[in-house]
Length: 420
Image 1: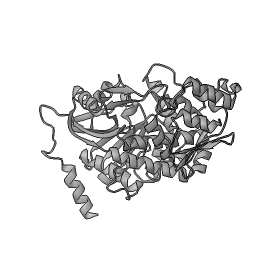
Image 2: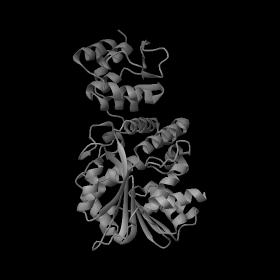
Image 3: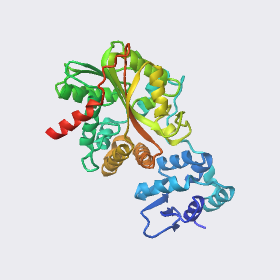
Image 4: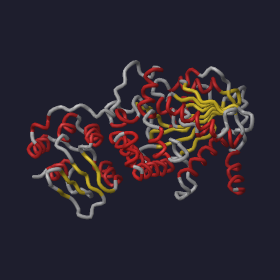
């Protein structure tokens, strides 16, 4: 039995995709939308030493396993069938097909994160952020496109384009926060400065963006200067826990709180409240779990080792309750689940279109990590395994919220669309 046949059997057989292997064996439909390619015998060590998701991920990042064709077809197989089933008979068949000498232990690919120090200390959080974001600004430019926005966009239609959808997201947040000229905005986890730059340019606010990524801050500060926004926008490398100059009129946090962790969520929300004036609004935009409670991203999972080390996902109910416990009154919750699937597919298309350049800028292993995690996340959002919510809250004082009786940003959006 060839290696391809053994691998197909390990997945349960009768796959809708093809499997090919370095020994020349091949199995599966001739017109399959994708082929899982086993390129090297070292795959045996990877999947035996770390059975399941992590072993397969290591094999892919290292180039021992690859995909030809539609990556989403391969990921749908994993979603519907499950992980590789390493029953003793399967392991024995793999050893016979590949050779026992290939069972020797291999080091993990260098792209794997191994953080040290107390969980969610300032130093360890900075290292976790650097692992993910200090890859290469040029790499992110190829993947994210001109907006350099690394969070879920808001799509009026699937064909509006990524950059227009990202602008719509920033405008929606600005309207929910009721931004007006002269207001002060704090953007926690500002990334490459998309929100603070648009808020200053289009809404006349004075904005501060904080990030733990030195490379993001350098890129954002340069873009602020180029756009002539230096009098309105300040970019800082700063932990949100150390922001000293509140209160602000509004606080936004877009795609950041996933890094906060489980036990630190109350601290994060209490700091949001402390940094906004009475009557000021706070908007949290982030990925949520579809089931109850809070869960750290598993340390031995692909996402925990390669993508978001030390991250955690909360369900939206937990987030709302924690916001109330912190003294913030939640006024509006909106889900954007389908929007994130569209956004991720656009990023994957950018990555694949610029593959050779992305590999040159960040290395093949890193490009493989991003391809696998973004495509896999798109599938999870499409099937409801992940969600994303915008939660708008206000620091109400003595029962006074300053909020409209009905959401005013909806009518504002209609008037903007009518005039555009």
